[in-house]
Structure formats: structure tokens, C-alpha cells
Image (cartoon, rainbow, N blue to C red; front, side):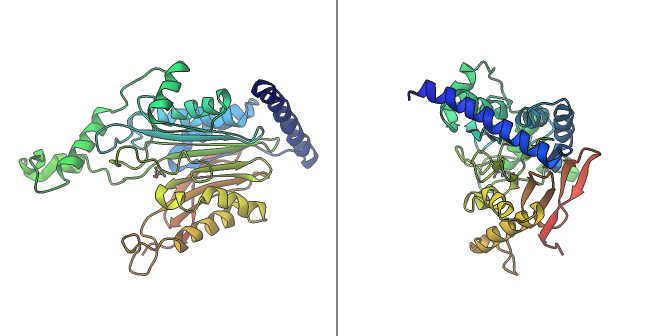
Length: 346
Ligand code: ASP
């Protein structure tokens, strides 16, 4: 069978799979659609729900949801306005998974494109590959009609410059706040986070499931650093028979445990989304041995969060540390909810 015939028959079997899952849902009696996201995703879950109610495909719904945040200059962890790498260049990572067709696509270290999630979706739909990176990903995006744009906003550039000039006492950078009474500039630009991402997953009335994760990654990262977000199984995993899980937080910890995949496997074995997410976090904690990543009690000193939903529409957000929230639209209301957690902050 040549590749074209194979792709054609794959499309047919994808349609068959989708029809099968619809039939299954019909047998199960249907359910309200669910959209779940990281705490910066209330607009994403709202948009996804509107589209799901109109009968949209689950992946179209979640990608349209996160596009709002990618395009928002005020979210400095995703897309346009995201914090740059150590050279002042915004490099974006994103992945998508489409449950009904078992499709996956992702891009890493992509520059100059506002919506990496749309490019990831096209990698899935228009190529025989799963992951495109850097220059190749950009050339693919341009070939697909995306426009190149400078993603570094003035605010992100100022935060980066402030980081740069405070790196060392022994360089020639001068912080203007050193020359101003009160250090107003420092306070105004004090951005306390180094991580940030949006993940959004949805299950529709038929029990079909999709997810997307998109990010500018760790701020001021070493150029070329790729986090967990575009890695299938780490920053996102979807199995249409089971559920979906995506993550935000310290990508390096997640990359070493493939914890989104792990959480979906726990759900396959019968765990609820909350139990599965907490078990995945426990695995990360067990695998964290570097002294600089542990607190005095031997617990990870960083956060990782998972957003999990199963085929029945049960969902949960979980975090390593207490105090975190996530966004979810349960078909009735769209609001922030408290994450379950492994460790309580003092
Ligand atoms: N997980 C992302 C990364 O490591 C960042 C984050 O979610 O905060 O790139």
C-alpha cells in the first residue's frame, strides 16, 4: 500500500473509530460536554464550551479556546507577549492530540508565530510527522500561510532587560532603579513567575476527547530549550478510550516521568482523574533526587499541575503544592476551582 492509499484508509478508519465512539456514547446515554484548563484558561474553557454546544469537534474547540490566550499580550507565559529566552527571543512550544483519530502533532522552539497550537494541529493534519522544531517548524508554518510577527512586547522586553541587568553584580548593566529613589521601576516589573503555560482538554457529549498545550516555556531559558509542553506523553496525552491529561509547571520534572501519559494509564486502570493526577505527582516527587530541587523535608521545591478528564466527563486539577486553582466548564458553570494537592504549604 502506498502512503497516499494508506492515508486514505487511515481517514476511513478514523471516521469508523469516531462513529464507534459516538455509538458507545449513545449506548451510555450521552453526557454534558466538559472543558478543563489551567487557571489562566477561563476564556478558553468558555470558548471551547460554546463551540462544543454547537457541535464542534473537540480539538477545534480547545484550540480556538487557547488561541485567545496565545493572542493576549497580557499573558506573559503563552504566545504573543510571552517572556523570551535568555537572548530576548520568544520561542514557543505546543502540542495537540485528537482522540477520535488518534492524531498527534507538535512544534517546539517555534519563533515569530502567534498561534503555535494551530501549527501543531497542521503538523498532525498535513504531514506524516508528529513533531517539528525550530527553523523547520517556522518554514512549515510560513508554507501553511502563517504570518511572521515579532512576539516580544515592550513589557516582556522590559522584564527580560531587568532580568538581564540583575544577573550579576559584575557586569556593565545598570538598573535604573539604582538611580531612582524608592526603586519604583523594580516593583512595577516584578514578575514573580518563571514558568507558565495553558493546557485545555475537552470531552464532548459523545465521549470524544481532545487536548492542547501551548506555552512560551520557562522564561529566560537557554536558547533551544524545549519543555514538556510539545512532548506527547509529557505535557499532554489523550486516549479516546480513557481520557486526557495535560500539565503546567516545571517541564523538566515532567519530561523525566512522561507524567501525562502516566496519569491517563492510571485512569485506564480505574483511577479517578484526581487519583490519577495525584499518583503521577507522587511519581515525580519520588523521582526528584537533586538536592537543589528539594526542600528541607525532602519534598520537591517546585510546582507541577495536571488537568485531567475522563471519558465519562469526570475531571480534576491537581498540584504538587496547595493553593493552586484550575478552570473548568462543567456544562453549567465556568469557574476557577481548587486543585487537589500532594503537599500543604506552611
Ligand atoms: N511546563 C512548561 C515548560 O516547562 C512551563 C510551565 O508550564 O510553567 O516549558
